[in-house]
Length: 251
Image 1 (tube, rainbow, N blue to C red):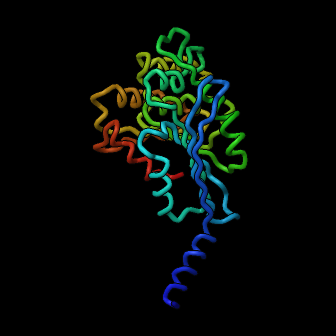
Image 2 (cartoon, helix red, strand yellow; image 1 turned 180 degrees about the horizontal axis):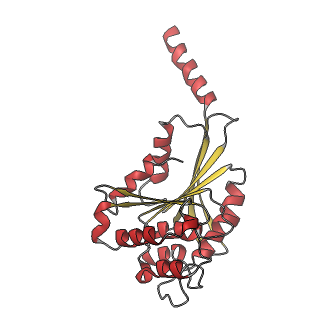
Image 3 (cartoon, rainbow, N blue to C red; image 1 turned 30 degrees about the vertical axis):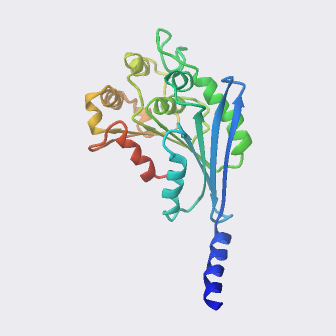
């Protein structure tokens, strides 16, 4: 009987040292006028540690919320973490355009841009609904997006009033509208990166439109933005394989 008591005590102590919570729900956005899948995974290791919230876009595509949580569990972190996955109800190019592509209002794209979306409404949904309802007490917030949602991350980084402390834009689609954002950024002296923006892209993306647009952005970065932007090329990574970098980033 004694041989079973010790493992049980160890299990009790382990549970006491780390509180975990997991929730899935569907919520409706009055800004976007559509429902979204929300997945929240929270780990509190020590009540005295700060809480970092990691917002993961396209969360339904590859089980990345659980995979990210598993990778963080292996690290000796000096913070608690809350992963908030946000996904459309189903994968759709039109839905991704609606939510991740900025409008042509001159603030990101020029007013002549033709391929546009309602990214501002999606951003309002995150900041006024998701943050207030599920993440009001966070000490530090990170936004993570890839491809179109990486473009959304760059868009968010240009907001003057920013709700995120760090943004990871992985292989962002800066090429959209014939790289209109880059042209607009270059000629508009008031357009800046206003939060910590980390851009990653793969060396194998030189053959598509992703890498050339990012490399051009690096060349035209304004002096005031150098301190905010970090751009890194990942050797031998392509547009999909670069997603593995999500599980090695510093949050």
